[in-house]
Length: 350
Image 1 (spheres, rainbow, N blue to C red):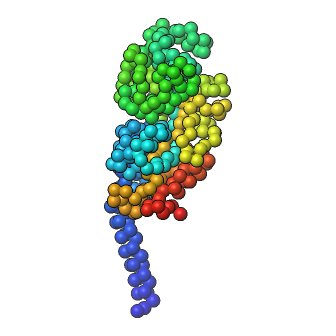
Image 2 (cartoon, helix red, strand yellow; image 1 turned 180 degrees about the vertical axis):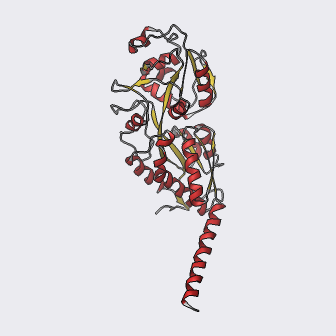
Image 3 (cartoon, rainbow, N blue to C red; image 1 turned 120 degrees about the vertical axis):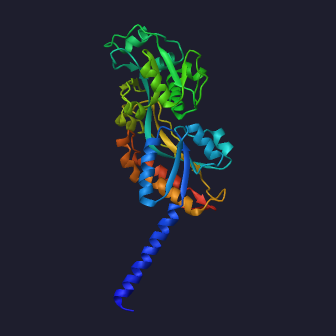
């Protein structure tokens, strides 16, 4: 056989191997679901990953509670949550769960006031408003922190989430730290026993829609949602006493704290001087041991490759979509978490 024929044969074999691998990968479909907050970010990265590797990711935005339950029930390959799983939730899973952060976001307090003024709120004020203890916009306590704004004589109409959500968890966790009264009554959770005077709405769209259509209304949504829909939101006082406007820079600054190895760190009421106080990581969760329910090693490898892409190359897409990218320290912690994943007790990532 001539040298030219050998080269042709060699290239043909390489092409067969390449397309065989591509065909095998294209049959892999990864299923996930949960938090709606990072869904635009994930959708973008999943599309890019599909174009790169031919692996499809089916993600359903069903809320953080749904993501945790879907993973626990083993009906999806991974879950997504804006709040780390509780000890009780992890016990229900029966086997160890790994958390790793993917990006940062924030919860903002949105409102509808005549003239669309920029206002400031303290954690104590927000707690009193959402507990029904301050009911008028021209209340002296609100006016005191907004001396340059003529607050209107309007009733405050409070709206909040009805569905179990990580957004509510982040919001209520912050208020539990900022207000002893809130901590001892409503506390922290994905769902709360709200004051009966509040009006429930489903998801960010429900809360935002109600606020934008109702003069005097106030509610809370994710920062990215408020930015995308051009909704007015308040600056909030942090633990250093500074009133911080929520934006990608102030959210990133909130993450300048020590992070535990399991990555389950709270950023609310951050000690960072210029950090926005209602900020949080959002996490993907998965079982540490991946050999269950007849899963293939090929699926697990593809899933971990996807996650590695998210915490590395995928971070460059965060800001353009309204999210704050992971700090380097958080990336390193996420890497370490992913390296704990095993199949039959053997680490998948080397």
